[in-house]
Length: 336
Image 1 (cartoon, rainbow, N blue to C red):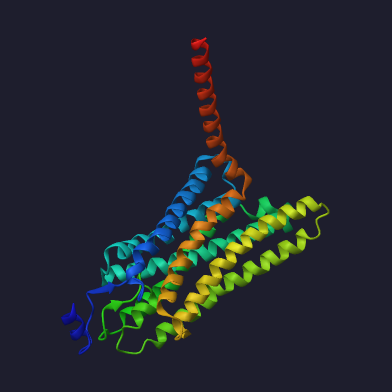
Image 2: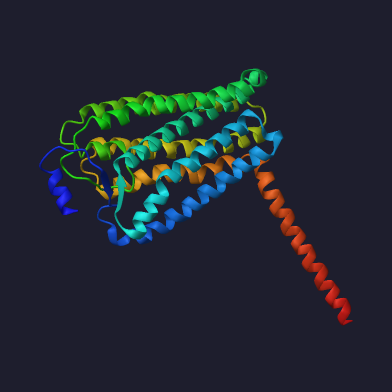
């Protein structure tokens, strides 16, 4: 490995692999850090798979709100699966080698899935806006064909925005090192290893983020502001409290998603005094924390999904208790 690094320091070359080292400065504690991350990943996959299964299997839930929930759940599973298993492998076994094509592929999917997550959250906010603010137009506006077009549009947007970033990486020459102090491959982590200027990469990444996820956040904020404005005009205190509870939980999840993402995004470019291990942990949290929380907030707060998940479990538990009681009573009768 030393020979490879030395050669990279002398002449520009095309790398064949990168070495992902994990969280710098916390190598001795990475095995302990893996415990909460493993638990969160398990919850994220289990919760989102349950949401998808309920929506897919129950035809009565094939409506816009639930279809968007299923889209979000699928995106969440993919988003955390692209990074977390590799991160855990690094925490358990040490630095991991990733080929150049594999690294670019991971980078593509990390950024594309993040963009599609933001787009689905925007679509869900619009769905709630129409349902609460203009309920009479809900069925005419949000049709099945529109949901399909939204799904295709968010995929197309992600591919169109992320692909130029990957092509900009390909134009770079690497002569410094092939070591990435991170748990996964991301745009600036790779670009900073180049021996020629990566200003264009940084400018494009910043512009793309502001014009996509930045605008998404603005429109989501506007949607929920109009929703809350409408909710305040409801005559029933009970209805207002219920709407505030639901919207409040949604807003908290959205704020966590965008706050962690933008903090990580900007500090990678401008936060030269922020400890590197803090940057890496935040970069992992903003990809894992929302997928963990989304099925809890959106799934449990949605009565129809909650009843279909909790209901069978409750009935099974009730039947088990009844069987146990019957057996106990039979035993008592025999003893008498």
